[in-house]
Length: 247
Image (cartoon, rainbow, N blue to C red; front, side, top):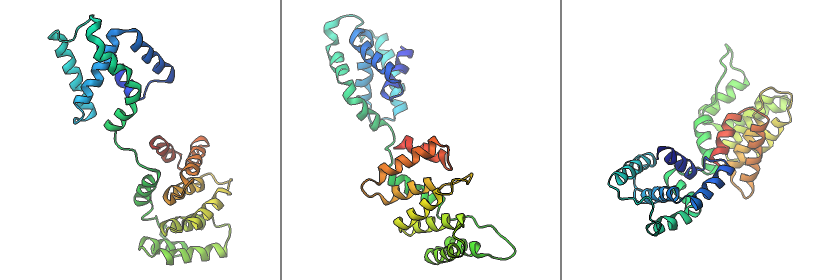
């Protein structure tokens, strides 16, 4: 029973590989005892839908074992199994709904972007020197919430040195915070052209901006960019991989 419970639970969570999923479904059709356990599992979860997923699974184990001790679940009579067969027949249709009910609601790409911006981009680090330079001035203004003034300093730096990678990165972030999304994307695209850099977050930040802007087609492009970040192990690949799992 314990092994089957874990096996059934993995099926409902979508953790079985494709080949094993097909075997699971075939076993339902060929093994009446297993079909009974699967159906009982489903029906019990339905009756316990107000409990948390882990609690429901543990409660199912308790109910099933109690029912076995009380001989309440027939082991062989096929005629009494028809409710379980009916439930088993619709399992494929209800798996997704069941899993979404018991799992935490997924965040939309825009929500993922909002959370990241709030957590990681509300303040930016400042390198302290004995004498304040232009970048320090721009970052101090940024951290004080003076985003337009910060952007002006950064763009002056870029005009003075068009190869200033860090200034372009920071300018893109400021534009993102100002909701100047097209401008932010332009800066992040420029970052992507610096292919010789060891750590280049340009592609990740462009995806972030598209997720935040959320125009038609933006999510699809952002997803492709995040996949590239992961596949090529670029800067911020761990965050990108986590977001793709959430997608």
